[in-house]
Amino acid sequence: MFDEITTFSFPTRIVFGCGAVRQLPKALAETGVKKPLIVTDPGLRATPVVSTVIGVLEEAGVPHEMFDRVHGNPIEEDVTESAALYRSAGCDGAIGLGGGSALDVAKAVVVMARYDGPLADLEWQAGGMNRMTGPFDPIIAIPTTSGTGSEVGRSSVITSHKLGRKIIIFSPHLMPQRAILDPQLTVGLPPFLTAATGMDAFTHCLESLTCPCFHPLCDAIAIHGLELVIRYLERATRDGGDIEARGYMQVAATMGAISFQKDLGAAHSLAHPLSTGFGLNHGLANALCLAAVMRFNLGPAAGHYARLASLFGVPARAMPEKDAAARSVAEVEAMIGRIGIVRGLRNHGVPRESLGPLSVKAFEDSCHKTNIRACTQSDLLRLYEESW
Picture (cartoon, rainbow, N blue to C red):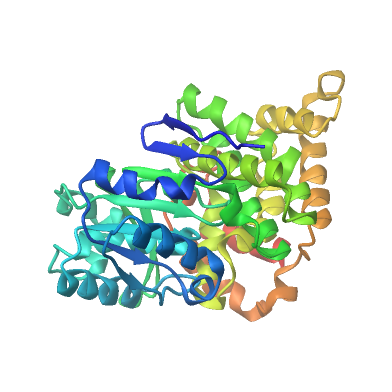
């Protein structure tokens, strides 16, 4: 399955298929990169995936440097330290290799390599996009998880110590010039991370679909992304070597990121502080909060959720819309259980007394501003309590 390498653009040029990583030297040549910085994390550095990428570069005679200290939830030191290496080594492009964290840092690196101010100045909410005039050096993204879709996104999410929360850096200049999707690179992803990152892709698709912005193209992409996750996430979690499931989950993650150019919703505002404060995997944090957010949104999102129910095989057309919508929440909760995620923030190291301070951070996050139902800080606190 997927033995033929396929190339398509939307607008990032995507190279997809088993063995697609061997197209990396060609991608570097096409984008004019002569000495890339590989940005990855220490866990992946110890796996054959990094050795494979290095081998491809060495075989093609491409010199490179490597930064392999990206945190699971990236922090600003990841960016500043890798940018310093980028400058000192004379690099002219970045290869993000790994999950969304590595890819997000790779994006920020090419900006901070030329920007003298603090990272916090680049936050989207603070007008950072206007400070990133670009163009910047090329970015090649090679995801090894199927969740964030950062390989086709225009944003980077980094924890700012100055602000004490995650910040979103956003600019068209951050969109990778090439994304290499090789299902074989995801085979070694453990079941828990497969499940958590898959739920990130699912949440991206669902929150973008319900976001009250008019973008029918993104809606269509989100719907098919949801269908792919429903069909293939459980398979990928049960059998890491299922190449068909792995490949389609990569596609679903990419579709999720394309669709959320519409924007996201309250689940992401709840998830971001959980990652910053308690180190929860972002996809896991989304999964733990999603059902509560869906119940909160049931009224205005009923039509969307009824359609989601039908993707699970529920005979939604034969049911009142509100009943089909409610059924979709139960189906999502059941799917989360089947892929091995234990529900309840209390089961993941989040104490109840932290929910109040977390709600303050969640309200500061911009994602809830495009939730289909307006949220107050009290609403977000209640959603945390329901998810606890």
